[in-house]
Every structure is written in structure tokens, then in C-alpha cells.
Length: 281
Image (cartoon, rainbow, N blue to C red; front, top):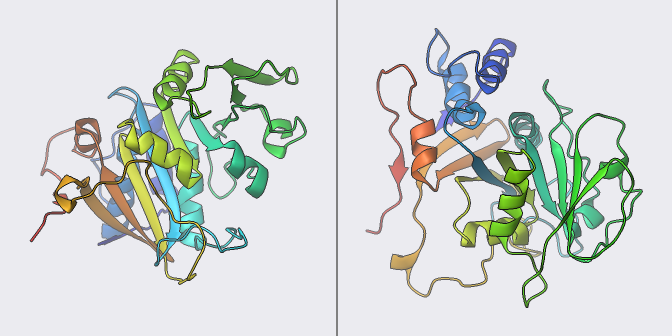
């Protein structure tokens, strides 16, 4: 496991990688700074085409909230700071309407420097009220609602109309295509677990990040549950995985496509990064 330290000069470098003014592989860094570049550099790159990243924080026993729905402190300070850094590195952040209504997230960058991403809510039936904080925040970030119904929205809110499937949900392929057409190339699927699982099951995630916090909840919703779970472990997804220490949390960074593996390699040569692929005994 690599322990991550995001010093000001490391974060400046990462933001320069995002704006195509630097690489993530060169320079003299401490081991913990190098780990930070190894973690965030691949997500900051814009030279390898569109990326879609799923990110979820959970407890040791795989829960994302209590039985009463309390999810505020699942991630520790390190996991929360990581989430804000991820927001700063992408063009847009996607959440489902249930998460928007229950957790009232702001989806802004507050724990690091960087620009707020576009805030995107998947809301088939138009349930999100117009006075929701993520729609009314006083900043220049785009705010987008993806809905199936003909429901007007305030002037600053962009509406993407898509058809729903027989189950009342959107096809994740349609969502991603619409966001790309809207000019958003790098997308973070932040929550909730159902929304992330739908993109995972559709094979649309470039990489998946699971941040595990050291607490046991004992009950409540699970992190990821797909609609079609595998019956045999031999059919399970076994991604290439890197493990990082985030002070309070442990992050599993999983490459789900060749593009994710390529992004983690040095741009200017040098030794290849070694990833671990889970395998049966």
C-alpha cells in the first residue's frame, strides 16, 4: 500500500496535469508525494479521451449508511478530502435523485483548490425541487438535470430529456452519450450505490474507486449491488487494483478498462507501474 501525501506543490502539479501543462511522472518527490501523483495523475490527464470514474465510500462491513440512512460520517477526513480532489479533476459529477434528496450534497470543491465541476442529477420523474442547494449555489458551475418528464426548470439549470426503460430508469449509455454531447468528457459517478452499480454493470466505468473507512456499522444499505450478480466467482470482475493510504481511509483504485491502465503509466518513459490483479487460488 502506498501512503499518500498531497502537499501544495504536488497538488499544483496535478492541476497542471489537468490543464495539459505538465506530466505526472517527472520530478523529484518524496515517496508519499510520488504516491499522490500516481493516484491523481491518471485521473487528471486529458490526452487519452473520455473517462468515467465511479467512487464510493463505505465501512469495513461494506455499508454506506446506517439503517436510518445516516451517511454523513462514513468517510473519514482523508476520504472526504480525496472526494473533493476528485471533483476538482473532472468536468462533471453525477448523482441520483435519491442521493440528492436525502443527503442534499453541494457537489462543490471546498477542501482543495480547483474549479467546481458541473453538478448533474439523474431525475427521471422530475422530483428534485428547484430550490435544492446544488441548483441554487452561487457559483459559475453548470447544473444539469437529466429527466424524462416535461418539467420546466429555472433559467440557469440545463435540462437533458431522455426516455426511460420499462423499469422506469435511464439507460446509462444514454446518460453518458448525452453528457459527452454536452461537452463533458471526464465524469465522476459519485452516488448513490444504485447509480454507480448501474454504470458498472453496463461496462461504462473506466475505473472504480472504493474508499474503506475503519468502522463497523452492522446494518444499512450496501455499497454496490448489481441487478445481475454473478453465480460463480470465476465470472466475477477482477480488476487491476492499486491500494493507497488516505490517512483515515484505505482506497482501492480499480482499473476497469485498458485506458485506465494506460493512464497510470509514465508519459515520458521510465519504469512501468506494477498493479495487482486479484486471482483465484
